[in-house]
Image (cartoon, rainbow, N blue to C red; front, top):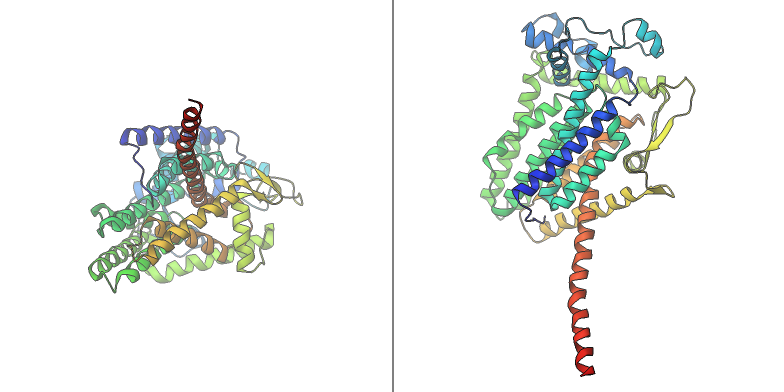
Length: 452
């Protein structure tokens, strides 16, 4: 995709300003975002930090097959426990897990709600990670189409009520976004270099580390791994007949990246060590069962086919989303809380952001297709297209609950599409203006000559 001459100082200044703005916005949101029971669950699970970092226990019965060990990968637990420990908390004496059949006050009386001395440091840390993800989105947009595309993406995510909620709570959405945005930057950097000269930068071999850590934070990151593999496979297939050396090079990077991600996924989680494949499958199976149970108990179950779910993901990402009554701490039986997903510039069931994202998607498809047809090396446009497709189709295919948290990743990826559309529109407008100025000047000169 297009490159822009902006300068290292300009990049640093703009990136720092966007990071600082996002950090301020997310930190302020930590004081106003309502408490959610999941925050109790995550802080309670911070005890895993004690098991590994303090007790150095990676072999005892705490790692046996259990609901807790199959529930979530451990990186988020390690980070949250580390934050509690660093802020002076006792990671061996945390709150109990949340009782979903009781209201907030009953949970508080039973010691199931963390106090501010536990909750606020973790919220602040997640806000920091969220701001880092915004910086990552700026860098990704900058690499794709220049500073304007990156700045628009970063500002859009920062202003999103959906994102502000989840990046300011003591959960792992902010941490996951920071790791996946860093991985996306790495993949785009690889694609740009490969598109230019058929080489893979040395630092690119660490991409698997970012993907593995992201996967060990939340299983959603499997979509980023699929997207990265899809880009590498597409590039290899496109070149295998004409540039075999380059095809082998990108294929080797892809295979090494996926293998490294898998190694990290297993290495950081002692629960997986005895049977990595079987226990990974047990985690996926439990997550599927949990989503079915939650849909039956709390509502929001989705019965649409894949086409309807793809459209729902787009609508919830760019137009508005619904927060279930229990999720918003409303009385049982209350209607869901409806709010805009991004800027709220909506009308007739669509939003400006949705229209811009569609335009950005057309641009990405067009650029990827034109390079493919011209027998060029697949570059950053193809890489982004693989990520967009993997996230949209992957989330839609597995979407059994219409809950806002599932649309945070698509909001981040979708912001890049909006940024690309705005950047292209501004570039087009400036080109029209440049072409119009000489014509006007010629016309004025002609009239002046006729007058004399």
